[in-house]
Image (cartoon, rainbow, N blue to C red):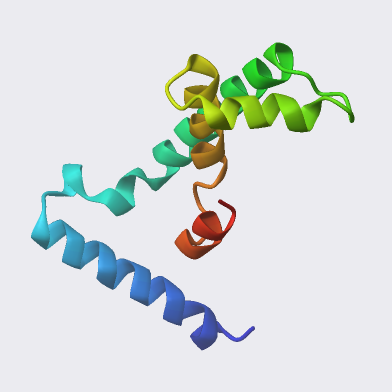
Length: 102
């Protein structure tokens, strides 16, 4: 890739950072917090994934019934952990890809 082709995305990124810095302060700029948000999403997905693995049936014959019972009871701790895991794992993907996975 040529230098001019590589400079275009970097220039666009710096321009968008500048716009966000003017709209809100540099400390509140959401583009400056993407790394921290990605690490938080990874930690949430890892913790909820381990919890789901330990608490529910992972066998080939019982996995469907286990997840189906989670889906029916919305406000149980299992349902909340499953939702947390699903949305944390979808962080960083396109919004339409997360919505279509439902």
